[in-house]
Image (cartoon, rainbow, N blue to C red; front, side):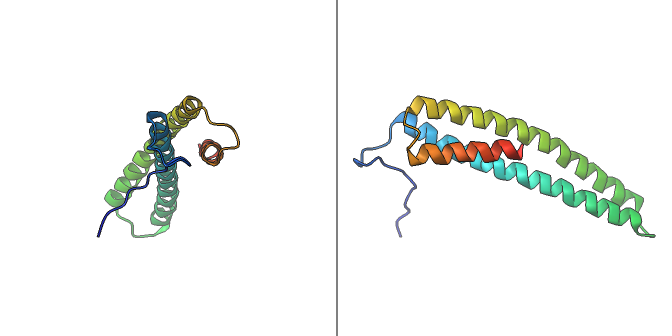
Length: 123
């Protein structure tokens, strides 16, 4: 079975230019980083609940509690790191949009602007 790649060709079925390729790649980067950022936030929130439940139990192991707190602190640190990387990727996507130079009515540009807006709201 042949493996197909996701390539978006223009209406004239011409191969994509370097600017189009960079734009497509940056969209994927922003999508991936937004998903990663959300996962770290969810992991941190889940850790807070687990730690509270463990502290509330009468027979909790201090070592396990300590390790859960450490893991949660690492997740919180990763939220900040993911936020910085997502903000940087959004700026790179904006530059790629400007370099591509397509109009505001282009579907790819609309999707990219929406992606940037939702990503920035998440941060």
